[in-house]
Length: 291
Ligand SMILES: NC(=O)c1ccc[n+]([C@@H]2O[C@H](COP(=O)([O-])OP(=O)(O)OC[C@H]3O[C@@H](n4cnc5c(N)ncnc54)[C@H](OP(=O)(O)O)[C@@H]3O)[C@@H](O)[C@H]2O)c1
Image (cartoon, helix red, strand yellow):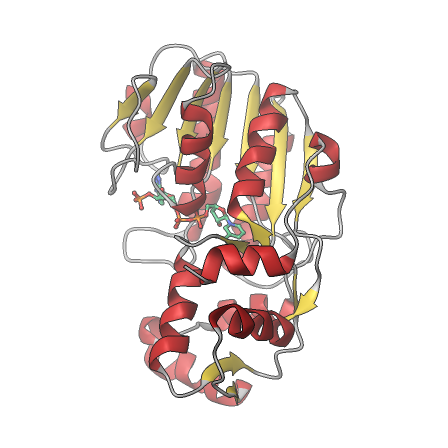
């Protein structure tokens, strides 16, 4: 199997590269490298430097690939990275690439709730990307994860720091919005199996435990042995800080909308499709927060 990976330098993409680098089923792995380097090296890697999926730089990719795997995503816009370009235009460019290099399949990491009509550019552009892939004529495996956790993930690192240094643990609003965290190792193993088994369709990627954000924080506190109190930050305060501080605020208005909409899976889940038992919440939290 020959795969071309975009976003392989990020959190989930790096775990995927580690998972397939020593798997003999994968003989060649092309990697689109932009700012950061891949976290591991392998002689199977074919690295394309200066590669951005929202630019013409994809033209440098040559040879043959069977699958395109796209982990590219941004959570906030910057001056040179806009949701429309990175999520939507980038996928259109990758579909063109797929056809040029003879790929038969496309794996896309979307997000839970992308089809709920949440009024946030992150969600809108990911949903548009999904539709481009579905209409492309390629085989597709579209995955919609909830919170993806692992010890090296930005979210776990940020939460650990907050719990260590603040006198309280901030929770935005009432904390009753739902989440269904999934372990990063389970997600990337499902992708590996999905590719090898030629699974196609749109699937949710959630752990077995659906909990409120408050319950999730209680589980994290337990794993860390923290006795710090939870402080519910009023939604009005968060909205005001998003307005006044703009990009410097801890969460912008779109991120607040996505948080309150919850992050759970309603569609068929990938784990039963590929015969994998995803880790339960206490184990995910221990693996992600106790080290
Ligand atoms: N983490 C979660 O909990 C979660 C939940 C649901 C869905 N997702 C989705 O899963 C995917 C991976 O998430 P992640 O947490 O691994 O994100 P991440 O750590 O921020 O990684 C994002 C990757 O995208 C690359 N990238 C950004 N803009 C690019 C561009 N224009 N061209 C090429 N590469 C570009 C980054 O490369 P450089 O940094 O090197 O530039 C990096 O490799 C994203 O699509 C995200 O929306 C994540």
